[in-house]
Length: 141
Image (tube, rainbow, N blue to C red; front, side, top):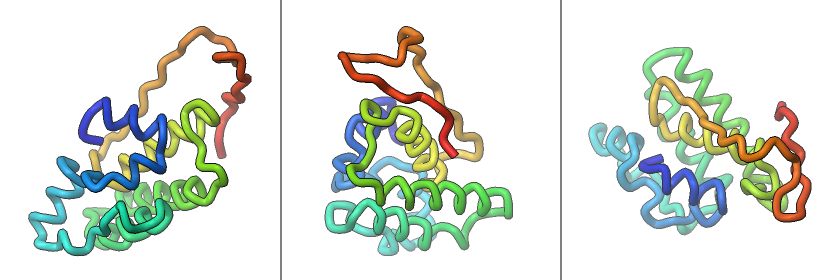
């Protein structure tokens, strides 16, 4: 993610975020692909499904990663995002906080953002209700 605002946009509406024409702008992945002269391998996010976007990113990048640890992390992120993208409706931070936060972390890995991906969670009030709705915050597989 290029900014905290980008993370927030993804958490609020993953589908809309992944359809943005500027999805790749300013990302490590964009720079990497430009340096290798392979920007053309990246899809136009506005013209593909979220699942196809994740698939094409994985295909374009995975064999270029530096070691087995990176490849394993990249594969794991892609596997999680593939399942996430097939949910109906697609979760967001309000409907499924844990799944959506994990998806954000996985997207950062898929986009080769950093060797050390971390996720910060804001602990709001310790209650499982917000705005009259109940949220299950259990662990995700």
